[in-house]
Amino acid sequence: MTITTEILEKLHFIKNNSASRAERHRAHAIVLLNQGKSKNELSEIFEVTQRTIYNWIKDFKANAIESLAIQKGRGRKSLLNEDSDKKNY
Image 1 (cartoon, rainbow, N blue to C red):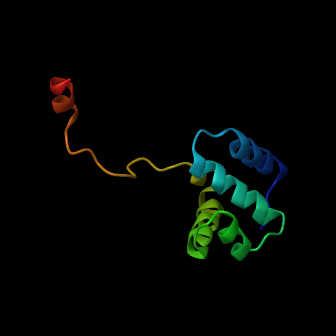
Image 2: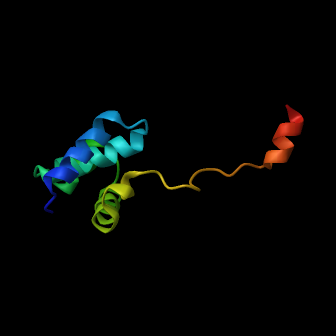
Image 3: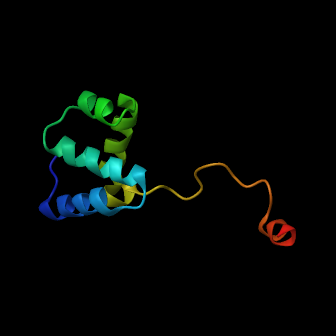
């Protein structure tokens, strides 16, 4: 995979400065892949499955830097709506 210098600089910035641990890991994985690390090595480094590494790479190829961010709507949904929360507090 060929990555431009500009994209590599952005990846390094995200790897070192992002508030999100997941974004830092994804950016770091792409940087290491560009440096020649294998997908198997990456899965061991980040303690995720090889399938996860393949997904990170696939997403990066499709959406570049935007793929590193956590997508809105992930995680458990609230059981209470916003109005109920305000009344209870």
